[in-house]
Image 1 (cartoon, one colour):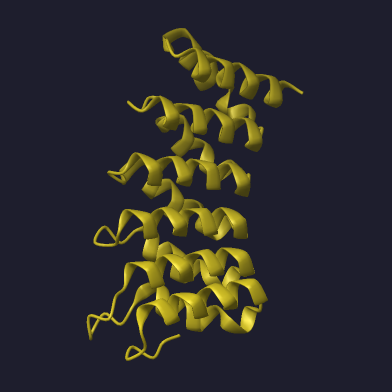
Image 2 (spheres, helix red, strand yellow):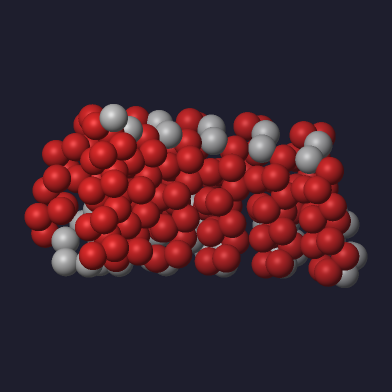
Length: 188
């Protein structure tokens, strides 16, 4: 996997296989493949994306360090950052909340932001509420909808006022429905 001389397709397939095996023993190998060899310029986006996917499949907290670095690397490909956010959601570690929150409010790609919101909902940590409330005011209706869903999953009463205020200003019917659903989830 980390033999930079190998064909990138073979390396990507190796990452996929390690994800299918789901052994935590592969985390460091996959983490290195995800981050690439910064000194030698051996970064292949498909290998990196497949490594992030595999780390999500393994669901080991030991992978959080690699995935958060990848997620917050603005030089990294959008697909790699999105897959890193997805993997962090699969792992469901509270250690990832800050990195996902930074991506949610600071990434320039709407898909990365939406995936970060989804991941925060999967983690279900009250520490994510502040980030998700900020996302309720995003330009993207998909991001607002995903943030509302995540707040409903977290079920923190800290979000109730923000959700109620968002309904007042929301014109998108899908987002309004999700905001109402989230309030209902918190109220139960």
